Length: 505
View 1: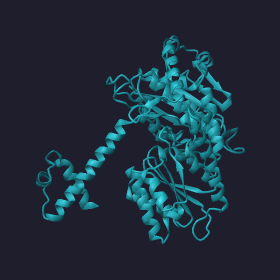
View 2: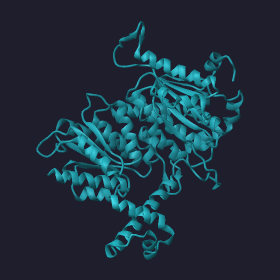
View 3: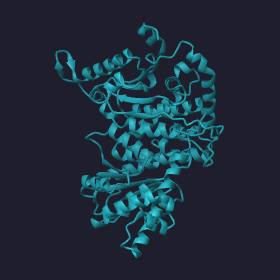
View 4: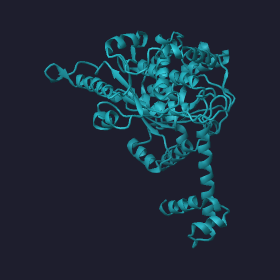
């Protein structure tokens, strides 16, 4: 890397004034020929992205298109019907939200809804959680809560935080309606409402696929309303669909601004001029840093409390999309890009010590936010604010890592507002798609997730067999004997784990 960092910074800074974003890749140690060497592959990735946006079958496992980019640019949708569905859904969300906020749709007893419980898993929770936490304030129209796991104690904590359920609107999110974690959360919520003497159906909304189990249930029980989840929107890219827009609108956020920020970022990242395209540059930096085979982790270090959940959101978006055993040709490649992170300057007191002096198996993505807060800040030292220290820790850490040969790229945004969050979501969605093309994998299916669900189902089936055996043989405690008796001789360890769990359930 040239020693003149200023010249390298000027050469490799990508500024996108339309979204108030800068991308600095100058602290990545790629050689002078890297970008030109990768340009043919990058152009092929642009071709693949264009075909995706035009509606090719991108997920052959399920025979479906991948259309999250249409959500913020409906005119790109491949059919008039899809365009109309997108546009009418946003209109419906805004109309429904207005009815909730004004009390035209109210809770039993003519109570105005003031709280919001979102029940989902994976992308149906991580995206809405990130948006809610990043943009929430004391002026929110409704306070959001989340059930995002099948942990009974965790659910009890959330119900305790909500308190009075009578003014709480519930949103249940599941495309198929059969996702076990979401189903369990819904059943637990229904039981909590019943214990409180409330009619769950009078306070419930479904976001689901047409004709799904959840859709049929909501229709049969006369829930307040239903919003669509289309098969061409994957969970991890669903935050600009009803999945993310309904909770955000009800919280009081400007969903049109969120969509606009994503739309403008999409326009920028369609550019085939690589040096003007921040998503293309990030994809190339991922390829450079990991040798195109995932041999280094990406550490997300956002220097802003409001971006605390961004790394969790990106873990699913990136790792579920990139972590694939086979490439597009069916060749075993075991691709991946591990993502973890916290926030600055908390990281100064957490794991930056290892980043600077420990095992060198990572690169860093810093995120800087120029605006400290709404309004002016007090001085904590003469001429220096708390935000100045945050800025100092970011650039000091970047320099300290650079001195030890640790690579980093830096994303700078002007402020955290709804449009910026939309732009950041779109930026990383596009980067994932372009990087997947560079390494020749399918970013839009998830066979490993499905395998895990099937394996979990097999454990539950085995538990039922153990329980049935114990009902008739209460004195038997030997895992070996029980496993043999129920035809599970290869699963003695799992039988033991089931017996141990049943003792403590």
